[in-house]
Amino acid sequence: YTTYKIEKENPSTFYPIVFNDIMGLTVKHGVLVGDVKLALKGRVKDNYMFNPKHKLSEGDQYYNTEVNPNDEVHVLVCVIPADTASQIEDEVIRKVREIRRAASELGIPQLAIITKIDKACPEIDQDLKNTYKSVNLKEKMGKFSADVGIPMNCIFPVKNYSEEINLNDDVDSLILSTLRHIIDFGEESMNHKMSQSEGSHR
Image (cartoon, rainbow, N blue to C red):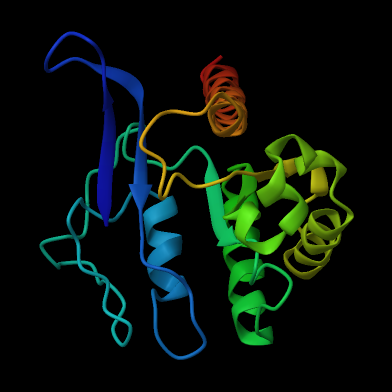
């Protein structure tokens, strides 16, 4: 369970947003659904090594007993490559749906990022401006949306930097647009929770 911070231009100062990365879901291995649910609640400490066979339990050194709002997850992001987005195994779909239900119960918005779109769609590989014109990509996103239940307007396509040496405006545009939506979702979620909390104390 790894936390990533985005550093500002001034050393040792960071933007007020962090990303927590976990291992992926698979049929027999990968992270346990129960551990993801604990992470959503802020119960998993940084650097915890997920065990595919044993769920994190209360009393473990990596179990967070004192949760504050900064520990909680405010946006759940599912990341999947475009070439496998329409070929997810049924058991993995079941796990994703279970995690989404848990997130919904906690008031956590969910979105998805479809990566490596250029590898799955030749027309996008030829010109990234074809991203939202590609019928092929739209079909893959539609199948993924139907499988896991994430609406199409909450699924964002991006191209990964891989062999490039210099930055590319078209690549950056998709990435930054996605990041903007993540921040907006998170801010809306936090504001809603704060207003609920204030209302309960009146």
